[in-house]
Figure 1: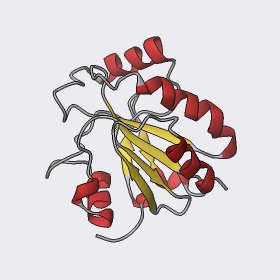
Figure 2: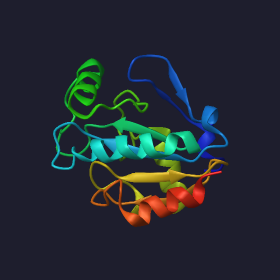
Figure 3: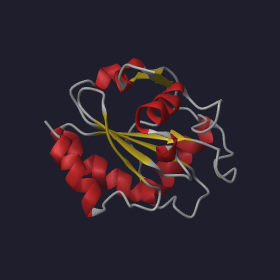
Figure 4: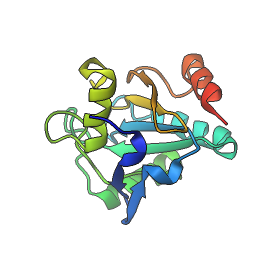
Length: 160
């Protein structure tokens, strides 16, 4: 597979399309999320990252997925209401998508082809930092919190 992350689009949680090409020139942190996971409180950290860095160009994009432990069973409306009510999330969220295996969203298949299957999500809240030109900068495992110094350093280095 070739190309960049800018070649992919997601269905928006509230309808419409989220085209990654619309984020060209900005780093994007793409995170597969779930509402009923022990790591779900990471939504708070993701919201804080979004609040802290969006004025500097960072896009945070949540991708709800039911792939791990069936921990995202709700509808798009339920997911959105949960995220807003419990974590004040106002960063963009996609519609629910598979992120692993042959049914994975094409973006996730592309990332695996670009940086290897070992970097595919192993659980909820896996993070990919995509550069302003659409390249994969780095993959961060689920247990790395959004405000970990290594992640924030990578984000700051990627900012325009």
